[in-house]
Image (cartoon, rainbow, N blue to C red; front, side):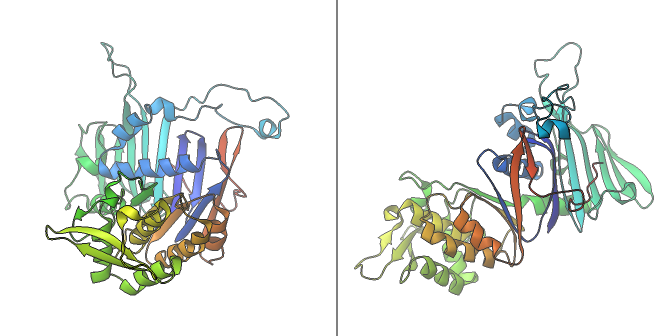
Length: 386
């Protein structure tokens, strides 16, 4: 389980170190930085997928992601006693990191150094440093792998050995190195991060793939866009917790049951049988809210749950009366996976926060900077950038 997430110099986040538990709720007013924290976590996951450079490009390039305020915001500035002043933040590096009891990881990205003759790609991001260490807190003695620019070193006993001198600065160690005998901790961490699942605004319009019959293959984890919904539900019925699935649907839609129709060409489709109707409703007939709730159900009841699941505004399109049932489903699912919920729906938040293990991360913005409400030096997790 991830115990800490650290983000520095990313959009509205000047420097945040965030404690995590099994069930985490991120909340705050519109514009407080919830989406930026979500996107930072997604960027971190892209390192294991080999796509962090392209992901930064879709955000407008690395310079567009940097904190746009002054290098420091003093107490006097925050109190309004003096105007916001000083030089622009000149630390042109984006830093992301995560810590757990087993292995921790940090990556630093910056702008390509000027070359001669000048290149048209002078704003390309490059990976300046990557580190993997054992345990939660970085110490030089706990460092297992250290990548600085093109040079990669690994620790063997008390000595350092050079693994590569020519690693491309556009490639993460996760995609460039793959020898299990030399870097077992890297492969273990890569597979762990690759298994994270982000569910962000499922498409439920009439043209959505989710509404059309799909070729069925055993699906132990719902795809991030939900196109394999029917196969995922059938997998839950066969090798997962079918009772929990039935109870979850009944909790939200009393008297209703799910049925998976399999056509002759092995295409699966979802049907909902409701009391009083003479025929089941097809997925194409579901309301947006009904379809979204069933998608969330399939994700949360995965028979092979991902180690970390992030739900971004899962209340979208749901009637408020469905939110307590959704909260009960999320709480149950958090028993065997770590969950983040990013939301500003009070009814959902209140139901989740009643659970004893819920960790609330309340965000607020002061002078454009995202801060964690109530966080002080005493309750901030220990974190040190390599």
